[in-house]
Length: 163
Image 1 (cartoon, rainbow, N blue to C red):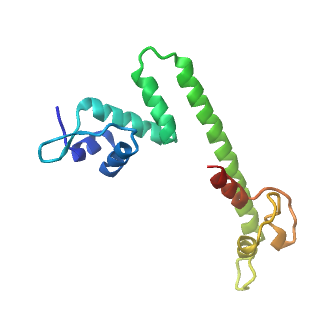
Image 2 (image 1 turned 180 degrees about the vertical axis):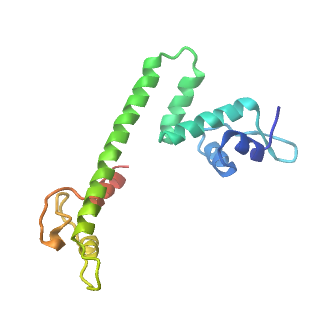
């Protein structure tokens, strides 16, 4: 059975825009087109799109999904390769979770230090406006409490820089 991009999107749970994107980055093969230029998809391609969507739902990157697709299509693959890829992803998720927990702890501390009243002074704003010179600068320097830990703001910056 052949379906257009809208039908394939509905059947797979992947938006038409994302299907086009996956085609443009080579994650998903370009669709066969009708004489009038409309994309046509088969049930097999919709299954592949579902695989991609479920992989994205688990947070796998495009490159990891590319590798997973290759492993999925290779029926002779050793499962240890799939397991290793998933285990590496778990480790990445653990690191992201630590970063998120650090950001949350920093924000909780700043919220605790903020009076939240009619006064204009606010340690949250002061911390956001503060120039950070070192990676281990205190997020609470503006509050005078001087806790030394990496802030969520710094963690987020470091994660973006390393990406």
